[in-house]
Length: 270
Ligand SMILES: NC(=O)C1=CN([C@@H]2O[C@H](COP(=O)(O)OP(=O)(O)OC[C@H]3O[C@@H](n4cnc5c(N)ncnc54)[C@H](O)[C@@H]3O)[C@@H](O)[C@H]2O)C=CC1
Ligand SMILES: O=C(O)[C@@H]1CCC=N1
Image (cartoon, rainbow, N blue to C red; front, top):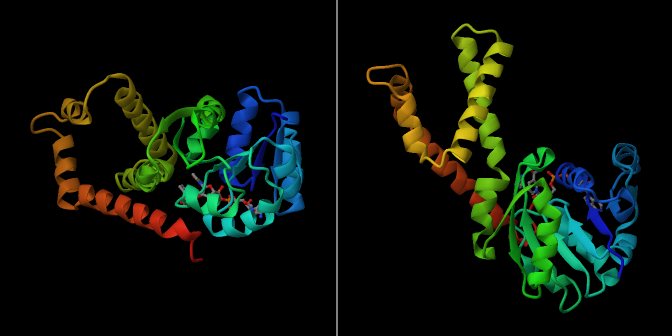
């Protein structure tokens, strides 16, 4: 069997994965992409040297298919693919919400399906890809999936019942941090700093805090306490964050993301 990998629906996350696989040493000649628009196929060829084919050709020639279209487009893609996917192909879905059963019902009996929730930091090899096996996916299929996703960050296996929560925390997670940086940069403007300086200060605080969280082994409460001097500046800010219900807002926000992931289980409602 060929060892080709095809990314079907090479948009933001599909291209991020593609670039990661090339950085990790996959030869562009062993990779295929499918796109809806010919201009997009041209862009991917120029940027990554990867050839675009039709979905049917990808299904016939690649041993691993990574489906990276929107949940709302997944039913149509599967309808197009199903007649061409032999049951020995590994089908990996990166779509939010859509359960492995959705694919299994539409593909040949016995097709191994793995559900993965990556996030955009795969672009800088700092992604997190949360992985769950479908009914027919074995250790071999999970290991193959990890081989693809580990070079672009970390991987974590979870039972599929935890994927909607993982999507809310990890798939969407980077967006919350960008939102916070944006809001804190606005605060810097209010305090009279030029925007570029405010941005640099907040980004470096975020990087420093992230590295300490990752490398110190300390609980975040301990790290925050070390910043919070008695009768100092930080505690005044923390009091305002608590007064404005930021903790509750974050809990509600992630719950809403989890709920949307659940709604997308049937391929979404557009
Ligand atoms: N953007 C993100 O941070 C993450 C996205 N995802 C998932 O990845 C999937 C894609 O999301 P994005 O990359 O953000 O969306 P996107 O809209 O950038 O990419 C989807 C691509 O699929 C193409 N497409 C649609 N139908 C097609 C078909 N039948 N054949 C070939 N190409 C087709 C579209 O033209 C588009 O380029 C979604 O299911 C999303 O839930 C998962 C984790 C993170
Ligand atoms: O917003 C979304 O639906 C996708 C899935 C996780 C991150 N982006």
